[in-house]
Length: 382
Ligand code: ATP
Ligand code: MG
Image 1 (cartoon, rainbow, N blue to C red):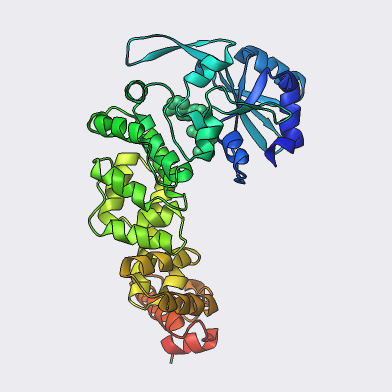
Image 2 (image 1 turned 90 degrees about the vertical axis):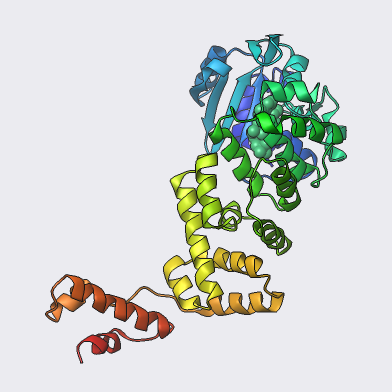
């Protein structure tokens, strides 16, 4: 459990967590309350101390401290393997209806009120005592994702909350949508152009890694927030019905064009796109029955590719498990012949060698990785 970790307790101790002057907040508190384990939990804390004081106290206790977002009051602390983002309590002052001005404070309720949903405004101290100023625990248990304050106004302050509303409705609302929140999201949906694409991308990637999101994606699509190609949605639903929950595979299910559009829309990283492309390409090979090639070229990604192919093609369960078994049994190994071997036999590097290696590769894969090096060389130098 995250709370019992010595590093977490050391951070609390440095920041008077026993006296409730520093509390954990957000995801970790929310999810441990419903017994959901978060393996790679990012831990957020809120504190009465000013950022400089957090830095000083942490350093005095031998905890590494980095001013990662000092202008918002955030200091990142790191001890052993644990990273905690500590943010000084804030409250909104004078709003022009659209942008809230933020000020440091010591008022816990005010800090809670500027968060997005009641279930995200749950705090706990070093001893695990819950502080729930807005009734978030009740909403959490009822699966209700409720905006704090007036939904329309909160969305006007930060349009990303529309995406977060859908993400948390998928993760904690069982894909049921709070009527008031949904109505406000619908009204705001046409006016979200100005939100940072990176922020949207990061919310969407977190959402796409959830067990059940298909219904939510459908609703978002109807509101014009996604533009999923026709055909992709049923495949996405089948994918999760099979138990799939990889964000990369879900991206791959959007198809090449959909993927390209997502890259631009969500500013996805090159690494994410490359991986999704690999899974999509593996799926294409598997659809054609080229198990050996899929495994040879894409390794582990071929396993995800199989799920993607099955979802796209609506394969019966037996076909999927049969192919998974066959794929798992393939003794995939790299080609045992390389350019140097061919050069030793007098071949010069160049197009001829490229062609020879391609022939060998093909023979290798088609033999299900069983030919010996000698047998392979025999094919070229007979
Ligand atoms: P996750 O489990 O995905 O980490 P989380 O609730 O911790 O969920 P974060 O994005 O890590 O979500 O944000 C931490 C907390 O900061 C949230 O619980 C919420 O209280 C607050 N928060 C984050 N983004 C916003 C926002 N756009 N508007 C208002 N409050 C926000
Ligand atoms: Mg978090």
